[in-house]
Length: 203
Image (cartoon, rainbow, N blue to C red):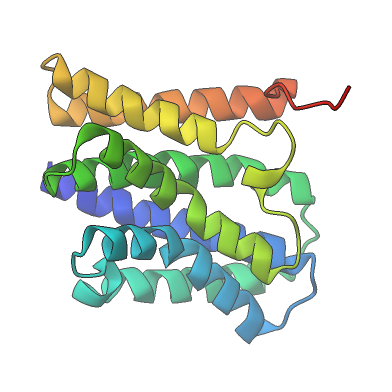
């Protein structure tokens, strides 16, 4: 299980770094700016989670995470310069990052002996906070604040799925994969079919 979490974390960092650069591309940032956005996107959620749980920040404990974020950010920057990528296309890799980080965050919180509700919220924080930093750095409204957007709610559903499966005796590895699949499937469906949450309308 530890090995799965480690490589899932590496994959999440890489995917989120890519989404950071793809958004920065549309703001015409230079290499330093795009790499900064990529790194903040990749490590932001996990950093806040670790600070709140009062555990050693994951990329301080293992600088390989930081190195992956920087290298992937730089490589993606030069790759993206060769082609114009529609802004909407970053939503799907972002959904992958959301799935990986949300479940990873919840699982780590559970291992840190956090109560189930706290663990589920830690999953959401890990999944969405990097994207919040990315969008703020790029001077646009974060995805979680767009009206009706199925984003943070999807991360919470996935985290609760993980916790619920483990409570009924499903092994950690299976519950992790199932929870990731739930997040990815629901988020992809929301993007593809424009599914939205009800929004408040003043009478």
